[in-house]
Length: 263
Image (tube, rainbow, N blue to C red; front, side, top):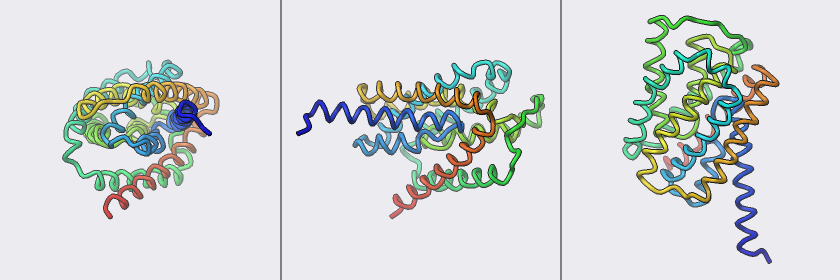
């Protein structure tokens, strides 16, 4: 007969593996760790806002793991990095502050549909995100960037899945970056700073379970580093294919979640 200690041991191993593999794919695609990690936390019985806060703290470790491996790529885009932080962070704070008043079902529906559209777009554009152009940050591009990044920040503060994917695609579309360059920026800004700020505001709603968080941080950091390492080895083709698949899975998952909550 299985003892309580054995149950907790196997349960913790399962949580670590879920965190590791979900964050490995997320590190390759530029987002989507919440597709698996957040539902796993909800299945453990955590309330939604507590699970979301725990997930966001863990994904800070994902951002650290991915950024350490890709730090050289980040140094070349410092100005864009500051634009993401300066204009996106107020959106994150706003989203985290009003999360109690937003309709989760509508947010899931919108983000789910958008993720599926991104997957189809990426699939239908064979060269999309495979090559990089060093665009200067002119005022026209800046204006096209700051409003969407603020809106994505609001979604990041209130919804777990898909916002990293949106930032990645926005960087590619606006500045004609390749996937590796865009994902590196996404993990440094969204993964570390946005999620840390969102976790801080959400943690005020409910406490974060420390024992569970330690396991998730270990899985997220190691998965983030391993995924970033694979990205550097295999290049933009692997990132693009993984991005398309993760976008599709995130979109379908959010749509199903929206439909289930509306019933």
